[in-house]
Amino acid sequence: MNRRRGWLAPLLVLLLVVVPIFEVWLLIQVGQQIGVWPTVLILVLEALLGAWLMRREGARAWTALNTSFATGRMPTTELTDGALVLVGGVLLMLPGFATDVIGFLCLLPFTRPLARRFLAWLVVRRIERLGGPLVTQLNRDSVIEGETVEGPVQPGRTGPSDPTVISGEIEDPRR
Image 1 (cartoon, rainbow, N blue to C red):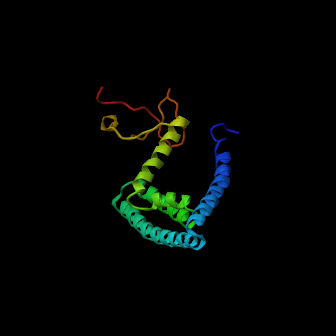
Image 2: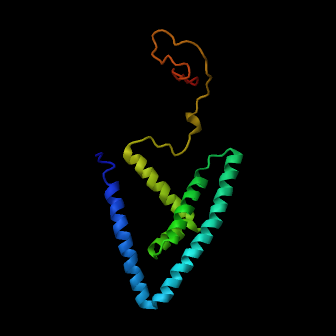
Image 3: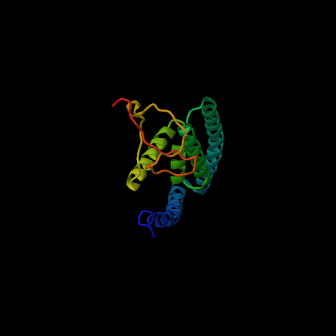
């Protein structure tokens, strides 16, 4: 098994075992402090609030995504928000207090930017760990104007015979 991916399966199994046990323990602790029925009522109210928030914020995320497509912008923030709204809503509908806290962080409009930044940090860290190129901002000095010229591959140059593949060299006119 690939060493880089070897940690994911055990982590998921651990989370699927540890999180429910922690949630049950927390529910018992809260139930002992405030009583069973108030605890159940809080869980039901959080689930209803989560469903309502997910519907409202999901509609806003969908509208923002459509606007982004209509204006021709890359919808990275909108797609991330949509995913966070979905995850947050599901976490709020699950019974438990710890998952509700994470769900609210993902779902509320004033805490979602924090969750978005944390998610971006995780993705960047993962890409850097895998050794992939990381482009954080396009530098205008690195853009080279050019043109495409069709023609056969010149002798002495290697290139595919498929005309849909472009092969060649970049010549910087500034040099």
